[in-house]
Length: 252
Image (tube, rainbow, N blue to C red; front, side):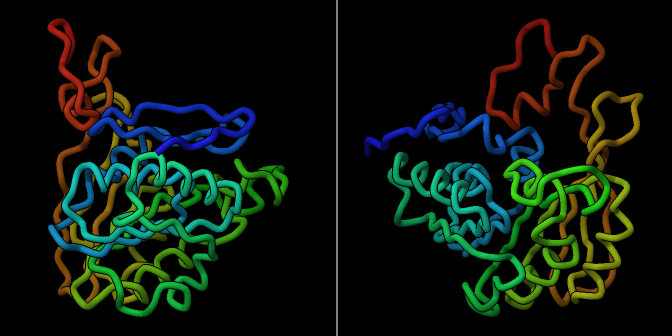
């Protein structure tokens, strides 16, 4: 389907099944964290999935390409972002599987319904409100700072949306790991898998990926670290694989 691009918008190739995504440099463009999170999530055939704070809709699009989920909802509070994501869904003829909804994460259960989802996924704002001088109306600030929702808001929304034994997936900064684990347990989501993400093998982590299961028993597996770059500054073989790219002969 042909979709009209607005001023400053561009069309990017997601390098997955021929899918394209509309992005705007004035708003918030997705990064490697969204790609890693979509790959980390274990989505089963027939699952109903909710992406909290979907932004440009990149995670629903990637999940539609990479998984056999039957229905994927993307919830986004910013009208411009939700409109852009919705047009990307139309562009890729995915209206039957992907539904972008404009709404507040803090009201997610009322918008979508309690115990609706088999899996909830979120790439939330990383920084606490008040940790920088930002405009509360700026799209980039809303995506980066906890201006419209906190980490606990995201976890509590996930718990309400998930079926019993449903799975929650999130990426965040290491400084917030204790907050994430405590918040998940308080909300009845037991942390089950944790993977740190490092830029290089000899550098400290810059992100973590976590999986939790609603109503599960305590036990968490610590996975080997995910290394983004090799010694020569090129992607590692695993990152090339996540992006669906061929590993260069001199890479890895």
